[in-house]
Image (cartoon, rainbow, N blue to C red; front, side, top):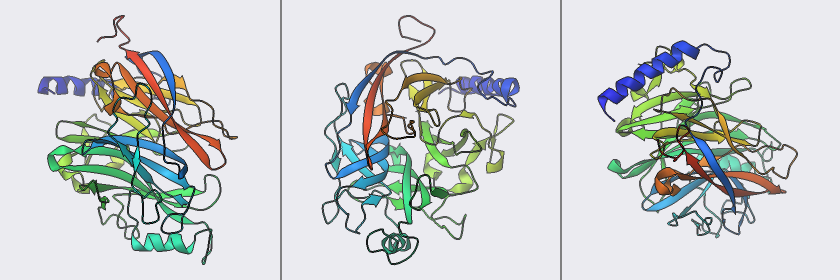
Length: 389
């Protein structure tokens, strides 16, 4: 991106702050999205391993020639090698990159008893805690309590032959919504046949693997790369909304907390995380990617506590962002809640230069069971009739 283009973007961001920086409704004075949905087509469930009863999430990115997918809480049809049927994360991979008629050729890494293997390695004390509190053979109260590492966004770093993977450390007990995050952090994955390495930090003495504490923005909701820099969003719940803040760091220094800076009120970047501002309301599971077809960045996420899958557009990762518009409504889950929460875009599957994009979301379809559904979106630039910017 040219220096002139960057200066123009910076000026636009400043103007956006002056216009609506203090508005109680962040969308009130935002422009319309520069994208229109021509057609949304449900392509059905994404294939999964027969031992998997259900799982959520599904961040994806390319690594070692494969599309790698990371999932959160996963219910298994048989216990894993540690006697667990509920694990905090799993992963799959495929070299099938044409999603036009669905995706049905995923592979799973299996553990020593043939169950799907977790992606993130637990620290010895985390693993022992989970074993001691397991529902089956529980030896310490509260039974069912566990530590979970929930995946967040993945960022390929080909120059260093690695994948950077964000995650959230969560303490959970049985019951609906009975969990809390103790922080977010970063791992480095260099060996496709091995596990990622969880970095260690000195931010919180109780949780040495956390890069950001529970009192700080939860970076890793979404990310995109511009040149040598990684732009990372944090959209943790605050009150009744999930405002998205933005951090930036050089890819080579991603693991150095002191190298990070945050978009602040004056339109510039600050090394003080407390000065990070909210750009728009999104969701803690979200995608942000550059789309060459409309020459804009697109954010895709679920409207919190709703079935609506939303999108926004911007000329740069820092904005100014458009107001939210609906792409489609997810199929209702088979539960009393009635909403979904983890819509994600998978840019490696984009077709026709970005004119067709693919989005997934999970929905409950039975007791402790769920499916990941795939939706194709045919798009065009909002200002044209021929679908080109």
